[in-house]
Image 1: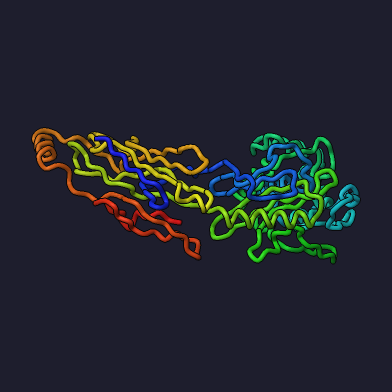
Image 2: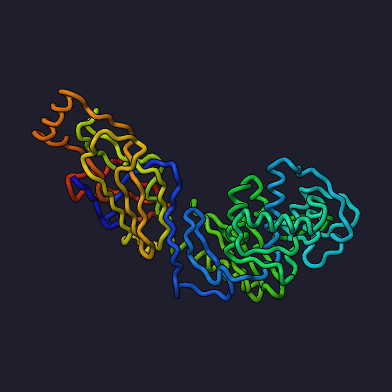
Length: 426
């Protein structure tokens, strides 16, 4: 018998199974229109957990990344530290080339000794061009050698449109990136080097008796960002790569092409506050949740739990949550024999502005076929008395609370009931 359970979510919302092997988060890649304004030439705002694009403007347009491209040098330094090629206590001699660098500086002195720890602080907090050259020369022998490594690594990281011509971000027609590539790079820094990521949240750093602030404007919010990098050149304008987390939800913002520091501060604040107020992540399925209990035809057990091997999180407009739909589909009863690695049905999730996503469901355990008299007896009992009466998932109503968690309440409209241990987590 074909079984299909379907309702509109969140009022009501039908949930089904869960078990986790692969991570599949539901990304809605349709940015809103007419709901936000910015003076930036390039913008990309992404929900990190799902990869959902919340807002974009020219995300693949080549642009001058200015000092935001120093994130590539930071990535390379962190990689060497993590792999044991260097230590924070390593010392380098400052060359005259590093000392005479123009633009933002940490004010290194020629021929002085400086540690890698000091240089990486001067790079990410003070955006020092002298620090960038000193690191490139100390780690790779020359700036050109470092640039060659950058272009090689950028391909490995999937930065499809980036090309590096220097390590500082100073103007060069061959030195280009896109907002999307900067977003990818920011995510890789956070994912690959969580032990070094807190460096980006440092608000000021003192070197050579000179204290300089971190110019990231979002570090000053009441609920501040924790990274990553500002940039400015006449060609690129004022830009920012930022990441900010609230209530377990993280946004990554790349913005560039603004005319003033004030524009950068106001527009970046406006965009992130808009996103946190308008959008929310709805965690539909968590690892190892059970979504249903299926009867088995002529198996060595009467029933089996059904599970999903995916985690599903939907990022969507709060005002559209009632349009979220979840459907469970499988043929019942399951026919023995079967094994737990073979899918027996699927869950379909539909969200406004996104394609339908389907996820396989699996039996939680194997079942063999009954033999001989036991098989005849089981078939006779099933045909005579039918399947055992069981409780299945049903609909729920979800209301938001101030603590940003879901309040899940049973809303039983049939003989089926939603067990407490199957409620989705916010």
